[in-house]
Image (tube, rainbow, N blue to C red; front, side, top):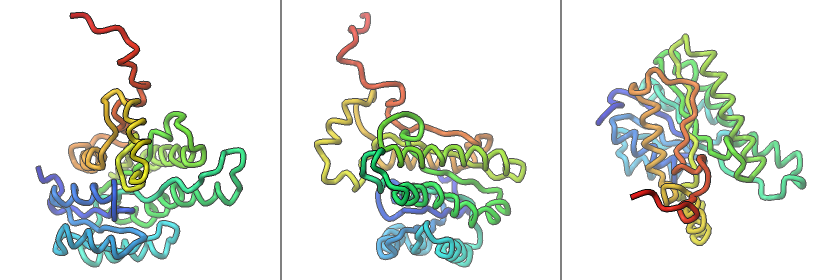
Length: 256
């Protein structure tokens, strides 16, 4: 299925993990893709893997509106339009206990995760109005329930609230805004925490943690015309963890 023929997407934080899987999936479905990341060499390497006739690797720091504007301009210069913004850049940068978190820690986490996504939307919005395009933001189940990481969770919840408001404001102009909220996903951030992943996967009703491709499939759906009447929604892609922990070993066997 090639739902993105003639479409152009810009993906932030796209050099590895979820962002890279999203870029590959959109390209597979026919999109031209701006692969953006704070590590321009890694972004260029992925663009070369996809194929330079279809992909462009760009430096992009979501903390800089100047850098965002430059990446959007380069995308338009190369491909002539913008149909989809995927806000994926971010991460958990606060490691202290919440009662010890400094004001600077709070500002750093919110700027990277929430304000960074808002900056990207602001820069892309005029072009998305022109193309009647859409935005998919990668939030987290942490923004929907208490899984720890207070500052990170608050920033992710902010992304969801921001998305609802943008959806209500710009729907009449044909621009859609949606969120994908992953559970635990196997990315390079977990490379040195194999034991933690093994422990976490037992909590998931589907019996495994997520793969980047699971998230990419959801993004590809929400960003496509198959979701043309969906806006302002959050789609958990979480192996069922929001239903509660895996209780299989604690429940009576099903009737035969």
